[in-house]
Image (tube, rainbow, N blue to C red):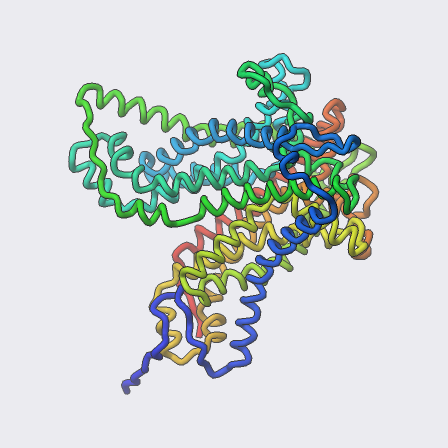
Length: 612
């Protein structure tokens, strides 16, 4: 018997197009639509609340914007609020970080994509991803213990706190972002360009230069801008090594080089310090700090939006093979030298990862003792980290429960219920929320939950401020998976008469849940290392029970803030030993989350399963 199925007139041809509103179960369809819109609304709400909080703070006092951006003097006691030295410090550390990370990151990405076979490129790329997952507080600890002494010996600076130390730490932090995005851009270049170039007798260096880079350059620049956005928003790692000295500006070229090896201040370190909690909630002092937050947010948003725009990439695909007049003399030696340099750049991230884990294993050997995991802390730097692990897991579990439905709903909305143009806009907003400096999330949470709502230090407030860190990752991975769905799945579902709710439940959910779970684990891996939001909202160094007994005035202890407090007492050997052990525990937890995410990605990559 033959059954003819009539295709609905509004059936989409791909998963990314708008779906029809017809169906046999309108109530469920409305519920699904409300859920997906709620997920995206939560993303937009974060931006609205954050901007509203900063704008309200600015309105609570007079801000002289011209003085703020042109005067280097910051002295609240004298009523002077000039941020030029902080803007200068932020610019210098970011330029230093990019100058170190971009050449190495681009060379490593080219080696991964163009030189190595897939069986070797895959584990090396995994090492880069692991390097990206190292919590920022661990980078800060390594900066305090290793980079500061190096700068101290280099510039004869007591302690080694300096803009140079901050730039080196940031370079290591943003390099994995540059490598990962650049590899994706290089992989997107069609193979026919390489084949055409090789058929002309070009060497590998000339193929990369003439055929590959012109097509991938826009995407590689996007990786740099996204790395810049992270560098601009990083607070804790810079806080520990920059010195936090106000008013330092060079007066000459020689003075510029002198300021590199002397303490300085950045926008994020000013906001991560004690001043936001001492300035009250109104007046010119608080308003000036909120103005610093607006400046920082605008800089990060500009770098993020510019890095994620697609117009340049679209134009680059129309460029043909670029031919250059090359000299036959020395072509082979130049190709060999370039190959050696790119392999060397590729080995650097792997060497950094191995070196970092070696240092953690050697200096944090106390964490290899099971008693360290299951013993509560004693005094300032004794005992184990049982309560800190419990508090961290509680924060992550609560964050996951809140973020998973919101992130998945936002991802389904981006992937199935919007036009391509609207989808790009929503995707950019999600990336912007994900790139928001977490110190601003912490400050907003402190004012809204801890002060205005009277919660005090609360583990629930800490989990809520971590939700914006996780939701965009879930939404973007889910939307990407939906866009990769074969068109025939969508067409077949609607040809069978499935309503939108049935389509999402029977086709979208089974197909996308591995990517959603992967995004959740990746987001939690990042949230596990966040320090700034928890300092303001949720944690104390000691005195909190392992499990809170309520929601209000119920702080917890957590590994990131525990390491942060111990690291500042760098002169006490017991505190440093405890900090290294705690850092190893945190890295192992983060690595476990990332390992699960990578395993899921590899296991379900290309899976095409659906239910009816």
